[in-house]
Amino acid sequence: MDKFSQYLKMAPLTLDGGMGSELEQQNINVDNNLWSASALIQSPGTIAKIHQHYFDAGAQGAITDTYQAHVATFLAQGFDSHKAYELIDTAVHLAKEGLALSTQDDGLIIGSVGPYGAYLANGAEYTGDYHLSKQAYQDFHRQRIERLVQDEVDLIGLETMPNFTEAQALAELLETEFSETPAYLSFSIKDGNTLCDGTSLATAVGYFEKYAQIKAIGVNCTAPDNILTALQAIQPQTTKQIIIYPNAGDTYDPQTKQWVDDYGPIDWQELVPQWLNQGATIIGGCCRTTPKDIIAIKQAIDSWCRKV
Image 1: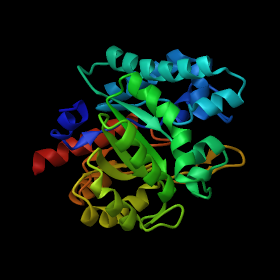
Image 2 (image 1 turned 90 degrees about the vertical axis):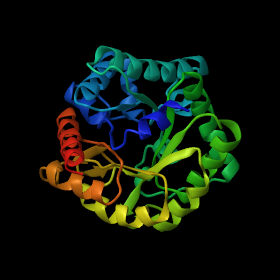
Image 3 (image 1 turned 30 degrees about the vertical axis):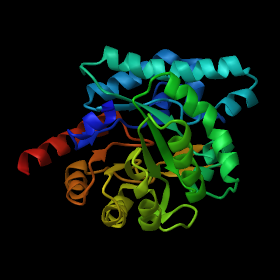
């Protein structure tokens, strides 16, 4: 049995939180096309420390800093392919280092695979407004997934997927070329019922039920207010574990590549039990969430578990 499946027996699980915003707190400039992956070049030790802080906060899984770390992205920044692959290797190593430095005895290393829209670096992961053939999507994603698998991540995280066709292509790619590696699939949604490209969330979730390799399905990087509605759409359509990791509710401006702080404090103690009662089994945070948020999420999960 793969390590992810073993962990799922202990669900509910806690994931980590935002990386880019934590790097900004450490005065790392991520306002560029590489986004958080630029820290792989500027300050790799900071990434390891952030992973450590999340594990110390109670996270049971670390998402590698490879969301924007695609070979094509590095090539466009003037690096050669050898360096591009080396930087992906570095991201995985840093997640493992963070775990080793932490108070946790063990944890999951999740190889982040962001959508084609992230490569465009124009906010398209929040619109899904791009169109490639199935083959083109697979050709784009193959290199990074292959390297993450070679680096022995515990699972692949297909995250912030706004485009139904792209998600279909990725599921088929995993099944045909990386069948031994488990994965989860997490959509980017424009509201609680709809993918960013307009596809019904319920329809999308139901489609992937046939892919046993995808062990968990859900949503990420949406405001906490959307999560309960999304869970109500997801839960009837799947027998898989349900994964959710909302952002802090702020708004992303693709022109300035900055988050607009327009959302109040999040009451995790109130929200997390609602999400668990609606079927969520893997909960973490996305952009703008912090180790303090993960501590609160873990505490809310533990409190809920003691009561059920």
